[in-house]
Length: 194
Image 1 (cartoon, rainbow, N blue to C red):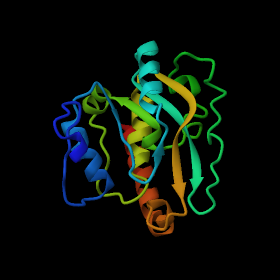
Image 2 (image 1 turned 90 degrees about the vertical axis):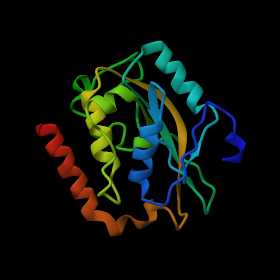
Image 3 (image 1 turned 120 degrees about the vertical axis):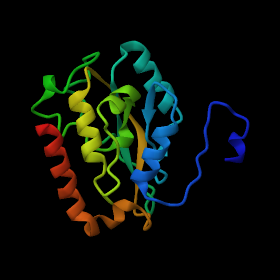
């Protein structure tokens, strides 16, 4: 945070550890930009991430921009190719969840950190991270935003490297949180009903 001192483009918010969702929600409250992007501390990001997303926003003006990710094994150093198959939307300048309704729940994954959201979309629809969940907190936020977005665009590049085999990462504790996954799906179901 010392590097950012005096740089008016950044706001540094320090807080006690209240969990991932709490940090995201508090960051969202102080965010000023037209778009928001949630980055997880245990992932790596390509240097062109913001540039690529900004370019897509300038071209399309969409509510949500989705980009791909890779998986990096921290033990072996192996980095995968981009994980998701964007071929269905690759040639489309923009699209809607309805236009890909048969695959919208599985084509891009539920990760919030592979999407950029128009802040107004999240504010207007009260879409925030649910602080009761320890895992799968991305599911209700991501899918509600995709379904409510007027338009979506995709950047078919692996712009985030999701790290596995770290030992201290949430991904390594998945077995402990199955109940949260079902809770997140229940929340999403209730959002869809309403």
